[in-house]
Length: 436
Image (cartoon, rainbow, N blue to C red):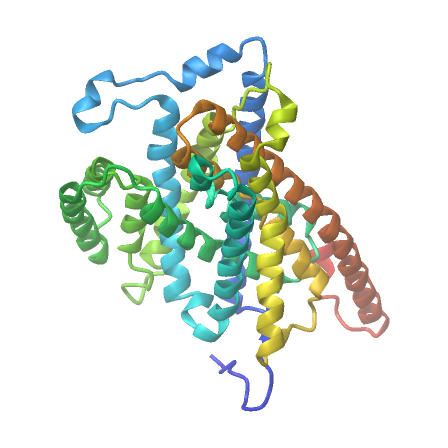
């Protein structure tokens, strides 16, 4: 492997092309997230149509149905909507944990120089939306301020799905940046949930949860993938974390962090983390997240005062945070990093490309809805949060599509010209299949 570290005195390039294993992994993720993003959108659309139809009450009754009333001793007498948010999303966060560890151990984030940009951009993309939300809701105060973290999240499934659909010719470095940014964003969002949205904290159940997590980690470190042992240990860990008052999805992240990334034996093609990620990602993207979206996105606007909704400081703060805050935070922090360091954009990427990706990061759907449910108890505020997240995410996606579609056409023309020139010069057309 050649050393890609730039020689002294030469500026390092932002969004530079990744290695072939990284590119292949990125392509696999993009294909999976495209399908998962479509199912996520489908679940949200069905929920919206059902909740606003003449049969909207049946949707509400389904979401509030408690399948196990006898689980009150363990605080597991949850309705279906809560099971989707606390239970099924734990699978999603388990996959996120695997992905995070892979990026920090074997991916781009293992190199501090390469990790600096997405980390700074992700931090900026969380701080600015939060400040915008707080600034808008500061005069209202009270319960409104609990929603400060709602516009800070980026939905990796939706964002990558949109990018895959409209960005067939966009540079690979841009895609890699969005993926890495979303991974760091997920880590920060998990931290925010664990610290700021924990209610009725109990230390003893959390300490007890460390035991099944440690046993789970011991088994996977020894490459023992016995489902009959790992799944019960994961369920016990989830139950204890839920009982502690910490949001139960954190258990999924902690379990993912225990899985080894590097190959254990010389004959292994993949590390265990990558193996489990490929095994569980279809369940997460194809079932867990779409079901959560179905129960979380069903905001009813029947009889609602739309004027009061769109002027609600919570709604304005969330939409402004997602649409404006993400762009200012991500684009601005990247510009400042390039301005005050020796870093510069890769030759294949323009600042307009970065603007499009910054807009795309304003799609906050899954985690934003989850934080909204944790922040507000009243049904009126909860409905307004859902409407704001859906509206802000849709606006961000549309604006990003406008910018990136134009850039994609420009890159397509460049690719066609390069192909024509190479054929004219008698050079084999290595890009032939890419444009088909």
